[in-house]
Length: 64
Image 1 (cartoon, rainbow, N blue to C red):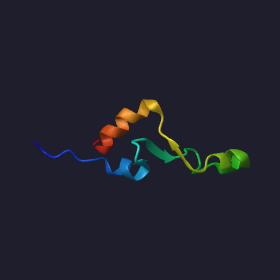
Image 2 (image 1 turned 60 degrees about the vertical axis):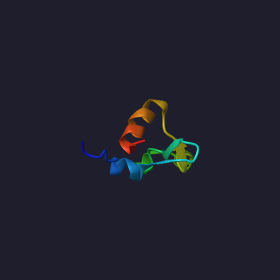
Image 3 (image 1 turned 90 degrees about the vertical axis):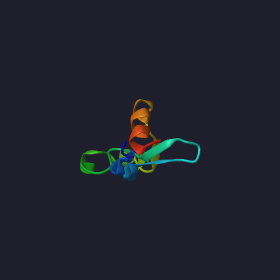
């Protein structure tokens, strides 16, 4: 049986905190910024916890 490998792309996008939460950068701040207002753009900075529906899939991809 081969070793289980973690998904390297997912490892670059998310990180697991010490308490076990999965956090990632806020979505929507990469392109088409001229159509978004500046207060929306500022609100997108920082990290947020991953949505509940995605946690199981992400944990499996990370091999946890």
